[in-house]
Length: 369
Image (cartoon, rainbow, N blue to C red; front, side, top):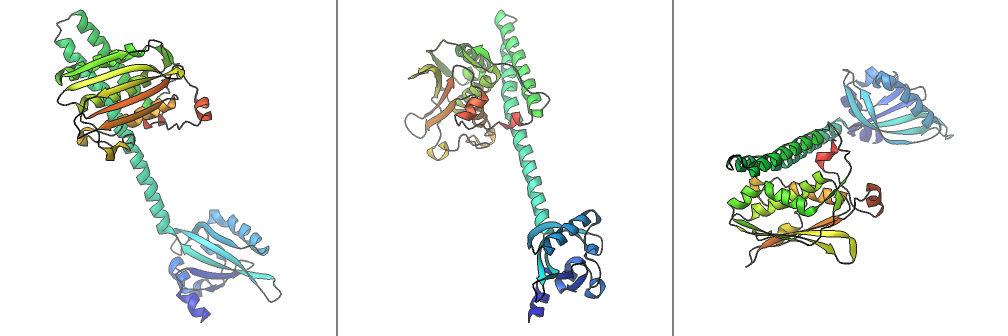
């Protein structure tokens, strides 16, 4: 009955003596390794082990002589036709009546299918990562490119006036930002520029100038209330990305016009921090979607959105020790969205952010830098 059970097993069950000579061989072993019982019994177990892995057999024998059992040991073995397969081994010592180790039994399971599936999963994950990176590039590069088109249009319609020259200068700056994003994303260089003192009011006005044609074409009014004049020390490029993404979303949500209110104010009880509020009168976001707005690749814009903007903004804000939150209503008499960004006035070192437990997730566009 025991012999019948062994022969009906789906796993190869093989026994050998302490010299590594095979003494028994079941039907599953023939199916997995390709050798008939008559061909392999009496021959060395090394017949099944690829030459580069022969030294591992000596280590297995040593451990078995000491009475140790080896479970679920994943390695490779060689079939009769030369094919290398992945196997999981469970190896146990065989003892005589005096409890002396006189041989070993091996149960070998072919796990080649599982290993192939794991490889496919890894490849799929790599492809997904590449897709996410491509989507990030497309989103982050598309914003300044759209700005350049708008600025060139404004310059072309201003007949060489000083204002047109200013538009072209801003367009040149935006093209430089495209180059910066592309090089940073593809890993050609790491941005080691030191943080600089910035006036948020001037920075926001620069960004609004970039979106001027879109704002005008949608009949959107901008209400400004800059209550903080103290400079903030930060990376200008990162804040441009953050504010551009928020403002672009607000414009997209107001297809039929409306008002965008932008305020800066001190945070009560914290003189070293401030907050920036962006309040639009757009279509708003449904309660079912609010919890997901900062997830990568989640978008409520259909084919018009990539779901990258707010995710990137969140990573950049949290990277420098700040927070970003969003509240919204839709389907009511006064729909709209308010994005609140809180930032420290000084640059917070990364080590300090780690120390206070802030969650830092570097966005895809910087992973390869």
